[in-house]
Image 1 (tube, rainbow, N blue to C red):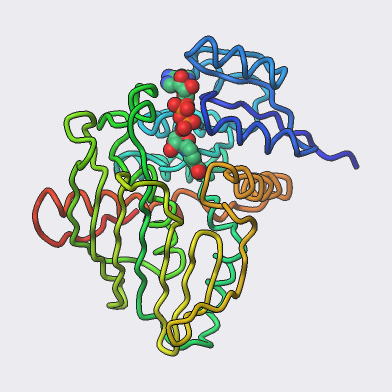
Image 2: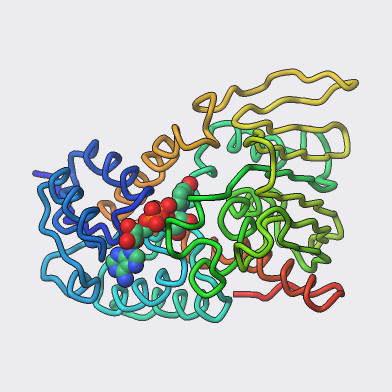
Length: 343
Ligand SMILES: NC(=O)c1ccc[n+]([C@@H]2O[C@H](COP(=O)([O-])OP(=O)(O)OC[C@H]3O[C@@H](n4cnc5c(N)ncnc54)[C@H](O)[C@@H]3O)[C@@H](O)[C@H]2O)c1
């Protein structure tokens, strides 16, 4: 029997859309049928690259006959409205991270995805597909190194200048939602609950450092969080670094410790590092390999559609990372511990 060919629409033709387009062009069972952007030049380029029909109005695209999957590659504040409208029309939706900018919007997306007749919602968290992350999860779950005691993470990169000023939406509270937490470190915050389980409460502090006066959102954050089981997570994120350092994630277990450093997973033994898993690629966290994790996730998402299976990184699975971001900021504003909102 011939394989069904899915018709995809890409909404938002900026940086990350290139990665979605490249991944879809590598898949035999997907055809890019529509592309959409309000910037004429970007739309023109996307049309040339894909041969798809171009649109400036996303409402028109989600309502198009025969569109199976909508890829939401838009500024953060548009993820919820586009997703909810598309799901309501029975389209399947894969949205970029963060799923939304508020917990209420995220809950509305989950509700829209769980209505009968709705399409299937997926949220991009491509780092869950890195082999070393899967390896760490297996070690934690196997119990071979004893019970989970907690984690510490560091996401210290450099973002400034045109990164904020040229986009028109980054650095602006209403459109980006927050700063380094919601944009850069959310992938790693997602791994805190993916690997360690549900987080109950957090005490955090955020501020705008080197971009003070230029952006409305935080570019530095520190926090300590407590898991439901009482274990702890320590969080440090900044966009004010000299350069992008590899992301670090330290996993503390009763009988040993693991360290994810960029894509590589090490066992920490007597202050020495022993390589356990090299990861999919040596620069998985950087832009050059956005595509690798994306291809793996998008192929999995489309396989679920083809086989009628539910996709695992759905709204409920993506919610805790957003809830942690919002909790850290709320804790900083209120100057006290806060309970994380639940989906
Ligand atoms: N998963 C990852 O590793 C990763 C990496 C980078 C970006 N992202 C995410 O991808 C999303 C987009 O980021 P980006 O870097 O591509 O941003 P971008 O600014 O390069 O692209 C966004 C595009 O959306 C267009 N747009 C804005 N409003 C629109 C509207 N109403 N209708 C149609 N088009 C509209 C803009 O003109 C722009 O071309 C964000 O959610 C971001 O966090 C994810």
